[in-house]
Image (cartoon, rainbow, N blue to C red; front, side, top):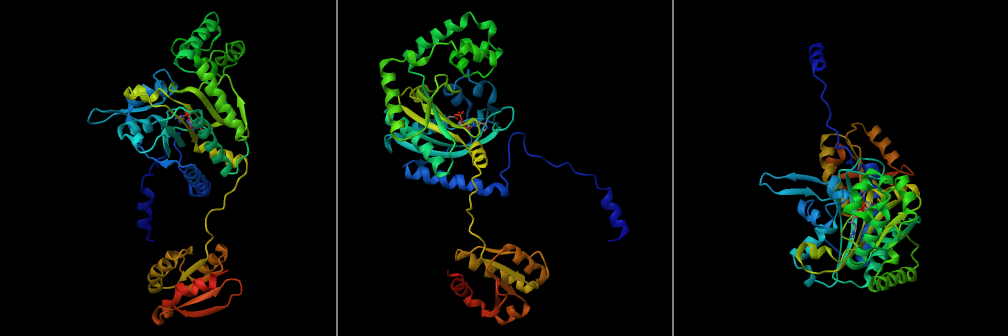
Length: 434
Ligand code: HAM
């Protein structure tokens, strides 16, 4: 390189790299096997339980979540990515998948397709949270919803399906924490009694809980501040306030959960952070992560809030990033990728050009072919072949291109043989046969 060219290069100002958005991660090739493992088990679990795939857009009207998740929830109050479009529509990146699925159910009359309708979805969700371990601003959920039936059978089926997802992944640390938060009628009297209990103790509550006292007193039970936890120990319990119908419903769910051998714990303080729930609420808790990896419950009033129609439903969503953490914590290592069987070496321009067609033909027969064609010499390509630990290497040079042949090298014995390239795919299949 000439010295003048060098000095021009030196003078180039250093460009600042664009970095990914805070709290939103790339899925890198090194982690791809873990993700693919979860996707595969997710699809299989969903299909064997007879759920149908549904996909809704990433953006929805902001009002959809304000009406259903609740204006007094952290999600709507603080965490939504709301923006106004050029056409003046007030949209948001979806913070969760349940309200969009119900929106789609009502919009497309999906109740005519099946009753109840069983659907599953997978995709990114967005919440403007303080990023920390297990809390991202973009994360992925795998969700199951059963829409159109209030039978406790379906509450238990949703729980069984989620547990089967984890069993399919070979995770062992999962338990279900479960509670009932009653219906409109019995919850109203519980709310009042809770407010009466906390009324004289307001000065001992954290700032967040003081705000929640009027808007959403059940969430006081959810607070992890030490002072609030101490107060909670004497608070009234929802289970003592359930009406007869809610009580019977909850008992039936618990019986089914036991019948299915699902490890569970009653948690009378579990209320969930979204307003749309009634009756059964639950979380899938990992004892190795010491955190919830999924959560769900019954939401019989959500459709009514959107359309005035009563459509009972129940569902769950699993946080995929947290599922991946569980796999790591339990040292579960999936081996999914078919091992490469063929290394393709080509020397010279003609051979490199011909290699794409020949490799393509082999790949189309279902065999993984790897190469290192950016390396020019045969020696360095064969070194890469050694590293790839393949049984066969194919070597193509100018002469072979000219003759319409190719060299097949047995990587273990080092023996080489020239074959007709027109017969390549058949010949390889024969040699790779176990
Ligand atoms: P959720 O409890 O808000 O429920 O979220 C479900 C799961 O998503 C959580 O248990 C967690 O694993 C994951 N998750 C939530 N926020 C984050 C975050 N910031 N970073 C990483 N993971 C997160 C729902 O979303 C309801 N739609 C569930 C449902 C479905 N209910 C009925 N059907």
